[in-house]
Amino acid sequence: MFDVTAIGELLIDFTPAGASAAGDPLFAQKPGGAPANVLAANSRLGGRNAFIGKVGNDGFGDFLRGMLEKLRIDVSGLCTDPEIPTTLAFVQLGRNGERSFSFYRKPGADLMLRDSEIKSSLISGCHILHFGSVSLTGEPSRSATLSAVKSARKAGRIVSYDPNYRPLLWEDAGTAKRQMAAGLKLADIVKVSEEEMTLLTGETDLEKGSAALARFGASLIFVSLGAGGAFYRSGDRCASLPAYDVKTIDTNGAGDAFLGAALFRLRGKTLEEIRSLKDAELKDILLFANAAGALATTKNGAIPAMPSLEEIRSCMETVPFLPRG
Ligand code: ADP
Image (cartoon, rainbow, N blue to C red; front, top):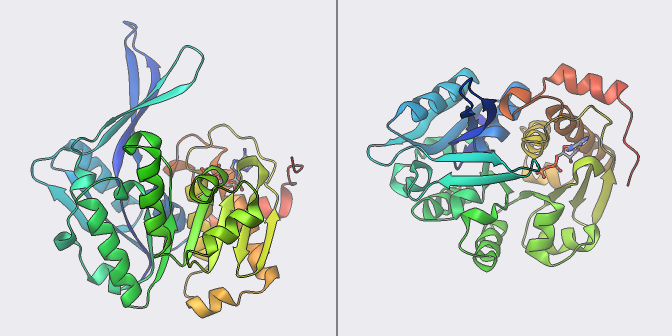
């Protein structure tokens, strides 16, 4: 049995890495893709995980497969497209340090995952199936993802969803909202940022926005608030908990660390047990996830920054909270 099987995009992020002696801009080759980051966080804590997705038949695909293997994530569901190359994204810094992204994904292998290629034992054999919205941006990966999620539900598996909003990957905001909402109807556990909550519900208020999200059907909702900490809703009950005051250098991957850690705390629990978690336990889970998110901001990159259980425990015991804004 796997604690979490994740389905979705796996790609290379090329991030700015200074310049060569000749003055040419250099880029560092980093693994990217939120569902894999969530597994990396969960696996670092001791979770047993599997990944379903697609890379190209190229050096970048080999690099990504090797990276997941090193994290002890099962890659028997990672397909290789014979023709379409591994998806790439380049991050560039403007004159004032602002980031801009260029995606090389039309086509890109991650979008080419087909329903018929999904290894069903990774779904029937998992406790939680996790997905995001980047694999919903186009076909055939949209149908493949939704079909995997529906089979997981039929098999009585718990479904976790993080509708990451990446405007550049969608035709327009209306399509993004519609497709991201389609995912909401299939999820038991949902994690959104405040911006994503507002996009999906039109609400800026956490209680109202999370209630609107819950109406799609999820039992447990997390809203991550960056340095503001996080908020949860379970049925009628909700609360927000502060963030830890750490030395933040790179917030990339904090949301995935948060969710990977929260799912780790929910491992082995039935949906009924998750629904009936007491407030004190939910608060403890949220603080655990906040600590994971905070620690992930203290190192560069996403996957290398995922904290261990000891680091999270020590953060919860020794690091003070940030004042609430
Ligand atoms: P996302 O990347 O999904 O937008 P957030 O940036 O909200 O996610 O980060 C996830 C969690 O990580 C937050 O809920 C918070 O607990 C923690 N976190 C993020 N940024 C900081 C920060 N600057 N200081 C402390 N904790 C942070």
